Amino acid sequence: MRMSQRMDNLAPYLFVEINKKIAAKKALGEEVINFSIGDPDIPTPENVINKLCQTAHDPVNHRYPETFGLPEFRRAIADWYMKRFSVSLDPDSQVLPLLGSKEGIAHMALCFVDPGDIVLVPDPGYPVYTGGTTLAGGKIHYMPLLQKNRFLPDLNAIPEEVLEKTKLMWINYPNNPTGAIAEIDFFNRVVDFAKKYDILVCHDGPYSEIAFDDYKPVSFLQAEGAKDIGVEFHSLSKSYNMTGWRVGMVVGNAKAIQALNIIKSNLDSGIPQAIQYAAIEALNGCQDAIEKHNAIYQRRRDLVIDVLNDIGVEAKSPKAGLYIWAKVPEGYTSIEFTNDLLDNIGVVVTPGTGYGTNGEGYIRLSLTIQDANLVKGLSRLSGWKNSKDRFKAKIRK
Ligand SMILES: *Cc1c(COP(=O)(O)O)cnc(C)c1O
Image 1 (cartoon, rainbow, N blue to C red):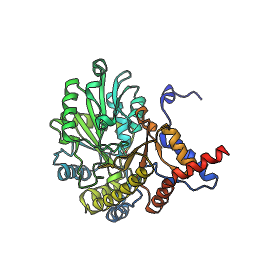
Image 2: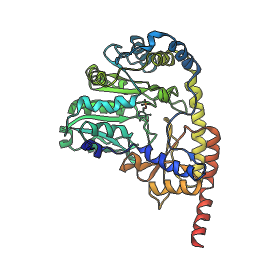
Image 3: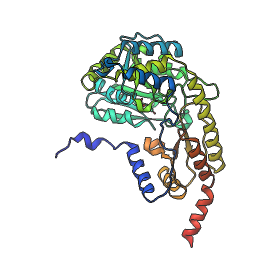
Image 4: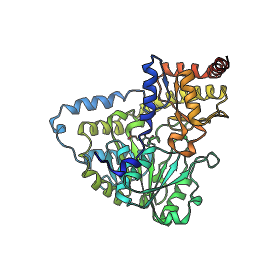
């Protein structure tokens, strides 16, 4: 078999590697506590499940759906954006349902990027921005997300000759993996910048509903003129604990939405209709679950931060999102510290470098871990220093 060159350029998906390591540990009969994956452990709200069960019985929903989605679903998405962000969207031209936002994110480059074109990608960042660009033959210019800039990209640091060839830029707030948030003044600056250089802005915002301490994240589309130059990807995965259902959306600029619809109509046949009805129920129905879940995540966040700080691992308490971005202790690289935690105390975290070179010096811990395991994991983490000394002593002997 002779595979495409494309395959050589595509890195295996980050978690594939981590899962291999965990499997090896488990095969040795050891229990590992996994803080590495962002996948809500809390079940989908009951009203949403009921809607799926009910609509699954209707034979109309057993046939091919449309790529463009049910008109009622597009309407529900537009209504939700109005309710939540006061952003008005035309459901027929500015809204496109997705089979989870990951596929839309990956496919977006196919609409705008020719071989040699440049895409701006945050580093550290969600690996799919890179994967999609690579599949389209595009080149990547990484925008470092640094603590000194509150993990916002420095737009002035991007060279002019890069910008001349740039077609598309990715941003993501509340941010995975850094936990950083952006305010509307940053989004306004991005709009001005993108208009100046004729760049499509793709804002990825799946964590907008997961926030703490009464903070409410903003939408990129709230920025003045954002719809002229950008789109926002969103998802029901994190907001409604529906990662397994594969349903998300992209909204905003009609030309970009139409382009993605053309690509997608050649690749997929839309979201199963019963799932679209369940998604409508999630968006239109009672929203109490969101606050309830945020209270759970906030409590977990506080517990994790306390334990990390106790063992000398520096981490700021995030205002939103599902992750804690913690600095590795001095003398370790991200990978070394990750391996140390796995080998010594059976705790899995994600090395920051899995999200890009600027993730060096950090690890990411996810808050989507069931309470019983969280308690176990935290007790292991509190004992990390001792286990470490013991381990060292053992080696010295
Ligand atoms: C989880 C996540 C997504 C999307 O997930 P889907 O389940 O595919 O909708 C997108 N972007 C980021 C940054 C994420 O963390």
